[in-house]
Image 1 (cartoon, protein in one colour):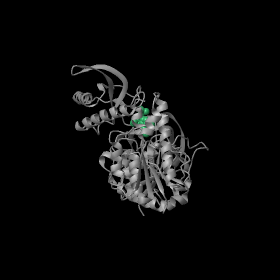
Image 2: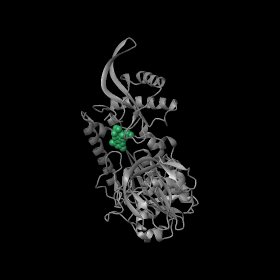
Image 3: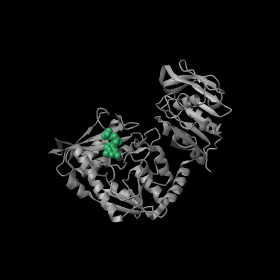
Image 4: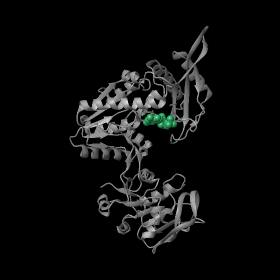
Length: 512
Ligand code: XMP
């Protein structure tokens, strides 16, 4: 049986990050609610258990306490933040409200270089976020680190292989956090490190086959990274039992429809039923005369669902619907209730009345960069795997004002030039998102000896880590100059190019 680490979720913010860090150490890891029974844990047979942080106070009777037997199973346990307080409190130590809360980067003094702190320097910067603290440790425990205001920053009972850290080793601000997690996994847990992304792929394929049996599977494929990786994984698992529906709404980037078809269609590498629905005109008709951004988004979203639904009806009842949900899309309720799932489809949710029995989300535990690794492992071309984000309503929100087929062509051509030049300048992996948008502004220019009265294209490029906030990228001027000159010369009806210097906030990344 493959070695694994079990993370028990007590409602903290960084729980999936803990799992991800363990996987980075080369050990398979799963997050389960704290309500998991001891029998279920024994069945999983983990090499170690990690108790996460959480917003509660252990001494409050209403707080989640899990099973006290966890500490008697003979399996090494690491408690992080609330998890360490829970360990102390359950085993007879004292937890109280700290006179001073600690939040943010905090220097910890190591008292005893052993256990998880074996390879850590005498003082080390960690990430703290707590209002309660451990006042006294349970019998058999030793304090191994402290801060000026937190007497127990780390504790251990080496004999029972129980460890507590008040700070969050999983957060990058904890400078030696990875060393500590790795020490837990390879030290007391005795893991060998048998997990790689290819194990994830093989394991997923095995599980999917087991679940699907002879059932029929339907997948809405957008051509984006997540749905592409999910589709290929499913296809490797169940082949022709899978049907992928790709709706071309006429608001895709230049050649994108054909590129998606080339990879997933009959001439591509995958053995799946691929349906491309060319619904361009249908979308343009619905969008005619509409200028209000939210109304445009709604129309595109609804029409998408109608098209998908019509195709699903033609296929008939399916057993499973695949969604490319990845971890950041999963809103964890945190306290062990089943996670609330954001309907992941790019445009705006799937119809309630598509007839299927169960949803499969094969990427649910992965972060974006892990999805990309899985994609490469599955042999998906790099240009697809490293695609930048693209909004579900597509160019519909990059054309300010009314959408027409002519405007789509303008923005597609301008955007293709921009992307090409960014790639030529070697900036394509550096800038997190960049695209051309078509403003609704026409202005006067001169070309040759003639007056022009044409549209202005806006270039957008942002650097961001989470897409919630962003900065306008400082593109080299010669790149902007080249792109401008090419767009004005090569794209009909565009005579002006503007660079968008707005950050987010106050702007958003997309124009609408
Ligand atoms: P904004 O414009 O809100 O965009 O700053 C933030 C990020 O989200 C992307 N985006 C979308 N993605 N469906 C999506 O899947 C949408 O409707 C949508 N709208 C914006 C946007 O490209 C950026 O990466």
